[in-house]
Image (cartoon, rainbow, N blue to C red; front, side, top):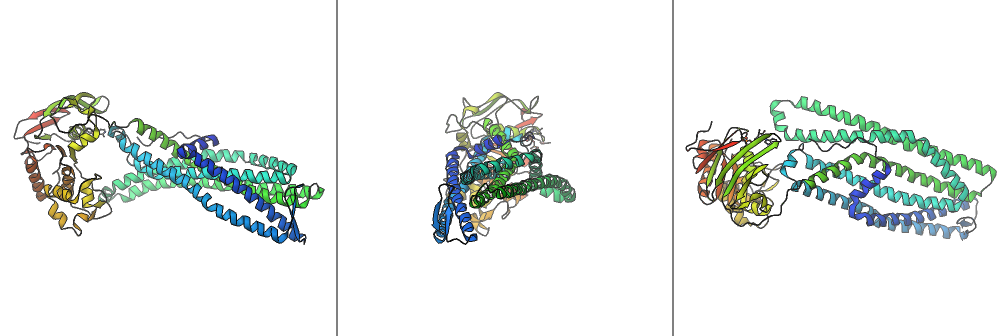
Length: 576
Ligand SMILES: Nc1ncnc2c1ncn2[C@@H]1O[C@H](COP(=O)(O)OP(=O)(O)OP(=O)(O)O)[C@@H](O)[C@H]1O
């Protein structure tokens, strides 16, 4: 299943507003302050335009003084004083524009921090079972690309609010300067806008297409990244590139169409509107119904207002493109939060016998992977788990680590159901060595600590010694501070596995679950891991999924899984 596909529907303006407000969340009062700030700047800008028009008229009429203000309230000022007044206003506008820009930028930045934080937490808190139902790359998509686009939609909403307030101030100025004519012009301009309605409707219909195609594309790119080694080994790069290029071309075609329409509509509106203003000017100037000064100011204000209308159109257009992403974030976040894995529970300090009582588990309803599994492991025991591929061994370890809950039956720790034990308490008592250990980008010490605070370098080194990898780490250029992981220095498979064992041993767990720790390792690493197991035997409870008889021979007991059914095998075990 991929990220929820939003329906391809046209987002109306109120819906876009709702989307933006949703992402802005608790910062709505900040948005209001920004809008009020914009209105104040709009008023100052309108006054500046009044001044510019008045100075221009005075200069063209060769007069030493200018008349500013609407008819009936005009002020007569010397031309120089007026120019300095205008300059003063410009300085004020420049000074105000700094906090104003900061306020606008902070809205989208804060929204992005909140949204990304919420996505990451929701993803990491969701049950493994829920996360497995998604295509890979879900977190990258939501916290990376989608959040970036959501931030853009907040920017557009902020810009639209700001533009609307400034537009309102300018239009108010126009109405004040020549009420009847400006209202008449506005009505005709609105009618011109209505003529463009069919093109706008078409743009709305096309707006969702590129975003949906892009979403598909990024999922496929994530997959290509993961399988890049296999692509190189199978020499299928041309086929994979061709497969991706088909998607890329589809996205580009849809985007190109949308961009074309997006550029055309505002230009048509802009030139049409200026044409309408000029027709008005020609008609009115002939009839001398209004004095030239008022008309010039009005034209200046309306042309400026047209710039704002164009900006508004752009913002709505971009917000519309972003809408499917915000829909998807909303749907996914909701689902992730509904599927949160409960972390609260009973605190326990020490491991007690672990008992599986008729435990069954299925990934898909009707095809159980584990059936009525029963066993008890006492503290300090070392138990091997064998079975053919796909028999349910990893599923069993997942249940033991409390990464999944049984569909039926119960897992007990002493008398307590594991389900009721606090997640953190269980994590403190247990550790996991996966089949394929993964490094994070950071120092060797960071990799052993693995995001857990409170462990000094002495403890890290002790864990590395216990995992028999200490000396090899010391031979690295910067010892425990050497950077390793994706994008940095690599380690051999055997070293990686032993760093992973050091990671598991660091917090001195009472139960260690190892999923085939020696499969596909060289003899040297296998021997060293064997030594670690010998040293842990009797002190730590160990569940060891393994194939090799050499690894299994130190186990106290062996469980054999076949088609989801578990039975205890006699020692020595023969693994087929
Ligand atoms: N996330 C999943 N979603 C659906 N089915 C799954 C999932 N993980 C495992 N399975 C299925 O459950 C069955 C048991 O898988 P599991 O990984 O537990 O087997 P295993 O014994 O550990 O195999 P292997 O030795 O190959 O690692 C398999 O049929 C597998 O296809």
